Image (cartoon, rainbow, N blue to C red):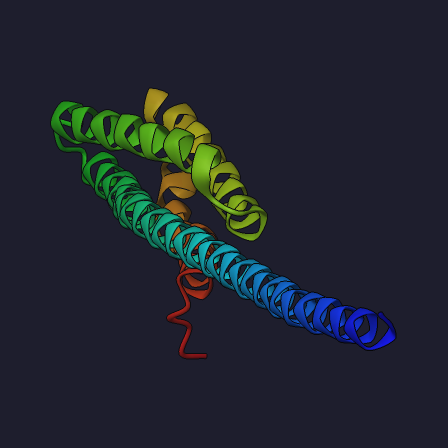
Length: 194
């Protein structure tokens, strides 16, 4: 019985070894597959994160582009309105000095003033601080000049000397601040050429 028991024992060990090897091989294959699946899932997650980052970057670029275009349109309107306002004041001064009927030039002045006021109000909502400071400074000087002009226009003969000085004063004082506003706007748009 000793030899048959030994043979049986060897057979059992052999079968157990064969089955154990198959189980170990399957276990290793399962573990490898799980690792591959985890790696693939991590790769997909990284791709999703990267795609989301690209989407956000594109949205930010688009937002900045729209903001720049909105500011550009605002700056064009504000600069045009300010220049027309100063020109209308200058024309009204000349009409008063020449003793012409100033009703037409006053009407044009009021139209330009209203257009400037509207453009400036819009600009206050969308421009950065540097441009807001420059545009407020220009607005202050425009309003001051307008106030003086209206005072002198009430009695042109009494304020003839002041009206004579006002034309050059508009060009020296007011235009300088309108030009500074324009420079601030160009800098913000990235087109400053020093």
